[in-house]
Structures are given as C-alpha cells and as structure tokens.
Length: 536
Image (tube, rainbow, N blue to C red):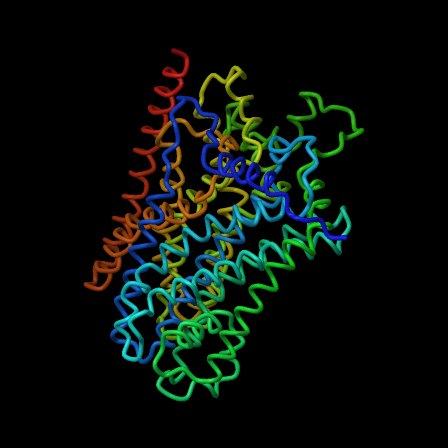
C-alpha cells in the first residue's frame, strides 16, 4: 500500500534542505565567508528575460514568441534541474538531516523534489518575467498574456523537475546496487550533453521552418515539450488559438500532472533504497595499507615529473584530485555540466560550412576558460568536512594545494580537450593548414588563465559544499572570464585583417607568456599572505 505524505516531516525536511543548500560554508585558509551569488545570478537571467521580451512586437505570432521563450527556458531550467537533482537526490549528507528517524519514501522524495523545484522555479521566474511583462505587445495576444505565461512557465518548471526525479527513480527501481552508481553517472553526463547539443542544434533547425505558414501541419513540432506550454499561452491568451494548440496544451498539463504523481507516489520505494546506497560509505578494502615507498613508486619517481612538481605536498594533492576526477560520481557530473560546451561545439563546427574556418580557431581560444571552470568544480565537494585535513596537516606552502589541483586539471581534463579541439580544427582546416598557427596564442593563454582561481590565495580542493545556484555562478564566471580572451582574440583578428600576421602572432604569444609570469608571481605572493593571516 502506498504511504502518505507526513506534513510535519515534510516541513522539517524542507527547512533542513534549505539551510544545507544556502548556508553550507567552506573550509578555507583565511576563514573568509563565501559571497552569496544566487541573487546576482537571478538578476542576470532577469535581464536576459527582458531582452527576450523586447522581441514580442517583431515576432510573427504569439505562438512563435511563446515557443521561442519556452525553448530558451526549457534548456536553461532543464540543465539546472538535472544539475540540482544530481546533488539533492543523492546527497551524501542526508544522514545529517534525518539520521535514524523513520522518514517514509514519498515524504522524502517530495521534500527533495520541492527543494529542486524551489531553485528551478526562481530561475524560471527570472527568465520568464520579461516575456510576461512585455508579451502583450505581440500582434495577436490578449492583455492578460503575462498572467497566463507565468502559469505555463510554472507548468514547464514542474514538468522538468518531475522528469529529473522520475528518471532517477526509474533507474533506481530497475537496476541493482552494483550497476546503479555507474549508470546514474553515465545518464547524467549523457543528458547534459544532449541538452547542450539540443540548445545549439534547434536554432539551426528553426531557420529551415516557415514560421509564417500553417504551423498545425508541422506534426514533428508538437512532439517537443516547449510547444505544449507555448500552446497553453496561445489557447488561453491568444486571439488565433486553434484546436491543435488546445489539444497540445491539455496534453502538456496532463503529462506534467502524471509525471509529478508518478515521481512522488509510485517511484520512491525503489528510489530511496538506491539513494542510501549512493550516500553510503564505501566498504573498507582488505588490501594492506600503502607504505610511503609504494606511494612514491612508478611515475612519481621520474625526474621530469619531480621537476614539474618538486613539492611532495603538491604531488599528493595531484594524486588526490586525479583519484576524485576518475572515481567520484558527483565530480564527474559537475565536470560534464561545466565542460559540455567544449565537447559539443567542435562537433557543430563540422556541420557549419559558412564559418570559413574561423569557428575551429575560436573554439581553441575558448579553451582558456576550461581550467577555471574545472578548478571551480574541483573546489566543490559533497563532503567538504574532509578538507579540514589540510588545516591540520603541516603544509609549508599553501600554494602547493592550488598547484597540485591545477596541474591535475591541466593534465587530466584540459589536455584531452585540447587534443579533441585541435583534432577537429585540423580536419576542418585540412585544405588551409597554415590557419592553425592562429590557434597557438589561444593555446598559450590556457596557462595564465589556469592561474585565475589561485589569485585569492585561499584555494583548497574539495573544501566547499555545493549550494543552490553554484552551477549558475560557475557558468556566469566562465562567460565573464571569456571577456579578456575575446579582447585579445579580437585584437589578433584585426591585426591579421590589416596584414600584420607576424606582429599578431608574436605579440599575442609574448602577451601570453608575460601574463603567465605575472600571474604566477601574484599567486605566490597572495598564497604567502593568506597563510600568514591564517596562522595569526
């Protein structure tokens, strides 16, 4: 028999999850508090929403405008829902929330689902606020379009959160304990890549559609979930609603309600058991403990390796980060979410024949952002208490913690992305291989850009708890970091356009080397200052 919802437990769980997701503080050298970035992120997405809303008077119809807005919100909020679900549904700190207390499955899953819905709802409201305010300017929209659009945006958000919860619930119900963790990791990474790929492919497909024609005849269009919720806008607030739009709107509402019911009341039995397996500590190994001699064996004894990482603490942090990158499920998903664009965009450059060979070079230049994004993911952990080890370990130089993590990211994450992007660029530019020289300054910029995370002087890997909005702040930081790269790349392009090819190459190369030397000195100085403040 299906268990009911315990309202008292639900309220207590919601309060606990809210505190965990918003107040979790990191372990740090200087003891500085983390800046709350969620309001700033919501403001940025609100500005984006008003930019979308300003397009209302120039769009062909209310349905086209609503479809465009719902498609943007679908990919933005959908990515956030998958990312938040990965952290909330399989949180290793759940034992700190309810411990031995008997919490039934539906109550627990509803609490987790509402936690995901709360954050995704805030993001959806920020994105859809502008279209709701300005949507009445569409040619065939009623004055109450804004209220209807907020309702359809709410249904779309519930649909995305319900899909995330149901997906994990189905996986947990039909897979055993041994295969569950690997399958969930692969599913999360694959779904992130699909969302990123769809966000890039759908605009290209939209160019081939005649939006001024009869949209009811496009049967494939009505298979897309954003079309269902756009049809809800048209059915309730449009002057040219059709029977097809009304049926699509009713279907979308029914599917949303059905998925919400299925995720909360039918799937928790299999989900909660698998969840406990995900958060349970690994069984102790029967192998004998490694000695210091065995730890330093193999590639650690190579002279070149020791010259690259002379500090033993740096080598130890390097091995720790490599182990987490290869084995930790949550870190793999975070890296896939933050680096998916670098995997997908080179594929799209193979299909874009109008770029004239510029797109592969631009993508190589964009790799300068990859170290920053990866290092910020490595900084996060579902169990940040373990990083307190660094506060009591006699590490002479705190910079060793940053350099070990930085070099692990460069070798295990950035280097494969460089090989992948350069391979695609070499194939696209096979008829004009001399253009690959313009990728050299972009590759050299990876070094100085990888030092940006250490400028504060308090970088400690795996020391910060994951909070709501953390992924969105990382995406924003990534785009802000692209600004200096874009300025340098634009300067190189302008110089090449006017015939100063050698000047552009040598100048950008010298600038990259100078930035690397200057940022390295600054990171060392800030790290020494941070350690002194921590001691005093």
